Length: 67
Image 1 (spheres, rainbow, N blue to C red):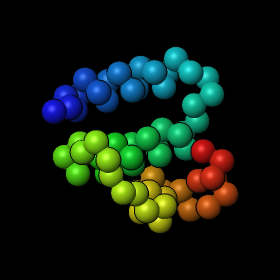
Image 2 (cartoon, rainbow, N blue to C red):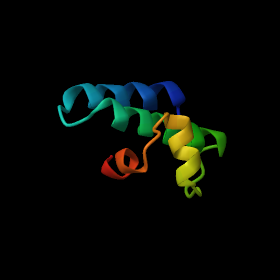
Image 3 (cartoon, rainbow, N blue to C red):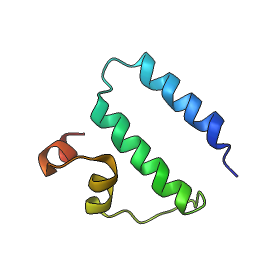
Image 4 (cartoon, one colour):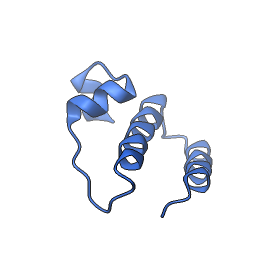
């Protein structure tokens, strides 16, 4: 089982260390993490672009593709 707090803390630390990371990347990561959490951290999950864009509040397919 994944320790939610430890995992999130480590990810946020990594984000703060990397100047290439934008708010869009963080938003996508958090959306992916939420989906993964909702599936009880299965090794493989199915992701629909529309769902990921909606959760991450990315409205443009171009922005999604860039990230």
